[in-house]
Image 1 (cartoon, rainbow, N blue to C red):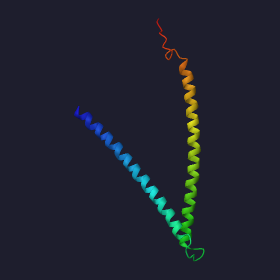
Image 2: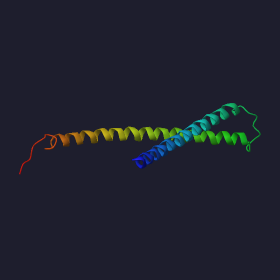
Image 3: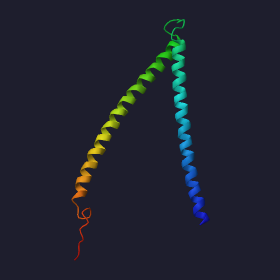
Length: 111
């Protein structure tokens, strides 16, 4: 009995550890995005030295990254809505199919 409890604790511990790691990664992603945005806002009106300006290159890279995030977000929302409609339609089909089955109607089948 104690063995089973130890195994269960290990499984729960691993789940909590994975969730914590995911939370830390999400937090770091949000912080990097926020700090990048702050960098762009702070250095938008800087003294540019020409074509090889390192600040301008950094700002362009950050802006293109934000544009990619927006496009990925729009695509993700569209896919999510499509999957939601698909799931609702499949659920409707399954409920129609199940409502006509002998098991659902609780028919007793004797030999």
